[in-house]
Amino acid sequence: MGLCGELVAETGPVRSAPAPLPRPVPLTAQVPRNYGKILPSLDDRTPNLRTYVLQNGDTVSEVADQLGLDPTSLLAFNQIKSPRMLRPGLVLKVPDRDGIAVRLDQPSTVSGLALQYHVFPEAIRFANRLSPEQEAVAGVVFVPGVTYSRSERRALLGEQFLWPTIGGRISSFFGRRNDPFTGAKTLHSGLDIANYMGAPVLVARDGVVVSMGFNSVLGNHIVVRHDLGYTTVYGHLSTFVTSPGARVRAGQLIGRVGATGYATGPHVHFSAYHWGRLLNPMTLFG
Ligand SMILES: [Zn+2]
Image 1 (cartoon, rainbow, N blue to C red):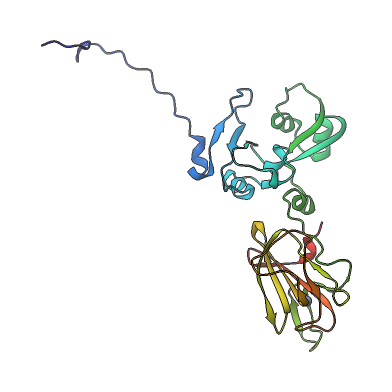
Image 2 (image 1 turned 135 degrees about the vertical axis):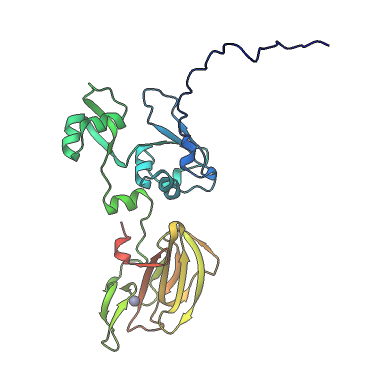
């Protein structure tokens, strides 16, 4: 009988182990597992800078939401000009707060930028990994604590829509109006653009034709579903130039202006929805 290993006395003086260090909270706990991994940066000059590896099926809005950020901040911080540039495996740097990217046409200073955007110079230095003394800045600078205007947001998120015909004249805006036939106050669910009979009707954004049909109000109409929860409707058409299920590109001809359904003259009625909620279409164009 023999023991191979070293026998350790169970009694006697025992060196107490050093107190365990507090366990760091795993950063991955902040997002569900299927949202990829947040890794602490390997660069120890910036302990607060985190990264996120994009997974298949991630969208910038979902990822940003999980990180507690606005999607435009993620794009700005990584100098990504459009969500279309996002690919699985891409490593996104995660800022610690929302902000915008400012492209400097000529060299500027941290204090100048701080004054211009009403933020602390230290915040700019921290976000851009500048040393405490650095003043001169050039190129693209992330300015934390500032948000984009609505139109800048739409442009950055690729949420702009094209005008759904060529030319034409707005004959009725979205909102409450007097019904053109009865005079009663009603909600006009879209934008009416008067145009000549047979003028092209163009899809406002890439998408899929989800339905095509006729009803007494919209006449011949087409419903197109887009990404990011958007749906658009094109009404009163004289003819269809697409088919249900077709994939369509922004600006593609899908029909022709008519006066079918509830219409006083040739026009296209254009409605837009975001996750089922009606939008004022005028807010969607560039
Ligand atoms: Zn209308």
